[in-house]
Image (cartoon, rainbow over all chains, first blue to last red; front, side, top):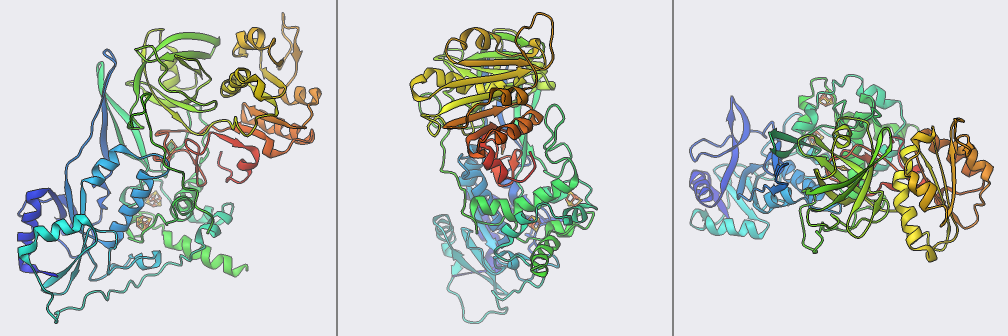
Amino acid sequence: MELKKDKLTEALLLLRGASNVILPVSNDGAPVFKLWDGVAEPCLSANTSLPPKDLLFPRSEKMYDYNVKTGNISEISSNKKQTVFGIRPCDVRSIENLDHAFLESGYTDSYYKTRRDGLTTIALACTETARTCFCDSMGLSPNDAPGADIVLNDRGDAYTVKSNTEKGEEITRLWKSLLSKETGKASKASGSVVCDFKARADKDLPEKLVARFDDPMWDKLSKACLGCGCCSFICPTCYCFDIGRENHGASGTAFRCWDSCMFSDYSRMAGGHDPRPSKKERLRNRYLHKLAYFNLRYGVTLCVGCGRCVDKCPANLDVTRAMDIISEGVRADG
Amino acid sequence: MAESIRAANIEAKNADGRAVNPLLPCMCRVIRITEETPDVKTFRIQTPDGAKPFDPMPGQLAMLSVMGVGEAMFSVTAKDDDWIESSIKKVGQLTEALHSLSEGDLIGVRGPYGNHFPVEDIKGKDLLFVGGGIGLAPVRSLIRYALEHREDYGSLDVLYGSRSYGDLVFKSDIFENWPSRCNVHITIDNAEDGWDGHVGFVPTYLEEKAFSPENKAVVLCGPPIMIKFCLASLMKMGFSKENVITTLEMRMKCGVGKCGRCNIGSKYVCLDGPVFTMSELDDLPDEK
Ligand code: SF4
Ligand code: SF4
Ligand code: FES
């Protein structure tokens, strides 16, 4: 099945009739996910600089209202339907990672689950990769997004449409009158994008990393880090949060918001003890969480190779460098 | 690839078995406040309709909040049919707010969180409880449990010490309730007027007592430095690390293994802990 590009607006309007539609639009030339107003042109030239995790795990999310006088506590939940269009394979994988974190590990996170149930993903396979993309080294392909409800592949004047799930089927039914049989010739070959930037992430990376917990390389790697937390905020898979409160007299609202393990007060306890007192321990924990601890717990890596942190770190820290050092270092000393 | 340590799904449930949001507190009343030491108070907590907020196992945790100030995790030191208790040392903003509460005030409570002391695995064994300072708080829940299930365990010894007489917690337990039902050995660091009990540090007292490691499990909680020396003493006395159990403290926000705050390596103290054997701790990275 394919969707001709000149039918795209119509297709999006149909989606908009059934749920909120979120898609990348240009913000001074850079694509960012926005709630679609039905008019703006989708900006699909490159991946968004900010990940789509906001849709499931908002940077600040109200949890419950309370009143100290009456003792009343009322849960706040959001069950709106959202459809995200134009999400890239790496970010689709990042949602699969967040699913592990919020829906497994013993407890189900109610807030996440409600939003997740209401989310439909329409992925767009990549037509080119950016300088810092290394998805392919992390075991995924820029040409497909198996975890999405629908995957679109750009064939020049049309998108091929592949549905992976029941939610995807619903959309192909909605689009029925707009979809046509794939024609033999495409003005552009799809499914052949190659990711050039490689990271050495062999499958025993988790064990190798854990084994080098006390390695002096962590001092070197973390030396330039500013502790700004930028890497966590722009990472599609980072999901640490803090819980806070906003008071108005006797009543107030508890909320949770993004946090970063790179902040200096992140793990400091009341009384002052901090198990991760310097940036060396904090960077090590971030990398190990992504590349080892998450694997040990859920069987998958918590980095999808989107390259955002590599691109944006103000101090030029590069997670792929750590992977290379580990892989090669272990080989060098046998 | 090491074996995945994915935990079986736990469903957070309220007292009637209905699934609930595990991050949502319920408002409870502080029905009794006991001043243990100048900076430790015990709070007895009950729901407004006179029930306990949940039924914790010994060693499990409760997230307590003073609405408008903040939340923090504490071990539940005791429970009864219709209340739970936590003993809290004043160390920061939230604990200060807790200390300024009066009986009858409302606080937020959620839990129980974490694993618990291995009450089944240690069945049939002699138990030695070693505590220092406020470290007796988590141990108290297990001592009470062992006394309630007296026939399941062998001999019970409590060895507890503090800096001074004034710093000893749970005085009514250690001097009145427990001595008739188990062996209680109390020490304070330095001699003081009016004290005719043992004087000396906990690790030294432990060695003096020369407990036999034979069929004995040790529960050891207290300040890190005391744990370190006690562990060395226990090793000298022939105990093995598998039989020495302790609890860890970490900063916590969610209590359910999500917020990322309390990890040590791939373990979350709020979920996989707070109870660990010393040999389990040896397998974790040194970030405690
Ligand atoms: S973005 Fe770079 S400088 Fe900022 S915390 Fe992350 S690694 Fe450190
Ligand atoms: S760690 Fe960096 S490259 Fe990996 S998913 Fe996060 S932002 Fe992308
Ligand atoms: S307190 Fe949030 S993960 Fe343990």
